[in-house]
Image 1 (tube, rainbow, N blue to C red):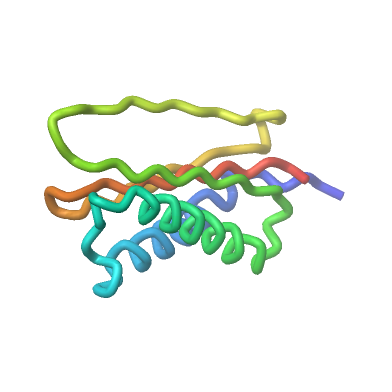
Image 2: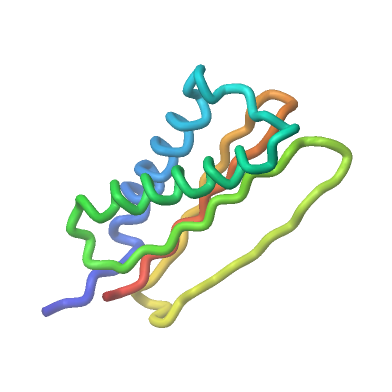
Length: 116
């Protein structure tokens, strides 16, 4: 059996992650990030990453997926982040999607697909 190649599915995987992230963050009931309650970010991170993984599992890509979600409050500070989890550089891959909410926050989802 031929191993799947992440690059062959990268566009679709990225679209799935983007659709989930944008849909979750643009939902009017959740639209305002509550800066006074840090547990809000914890719930969002858990929900978004679980939904992305669930959507990816419904398709038979042939990968094990990891998903990291980061929510940052916008302000005067910055953040730089890099991560790679490739066991097979010819078949594995990573996509990153970002959602910016006005001047309030930025949400980032990093999805890595590893050959199962």
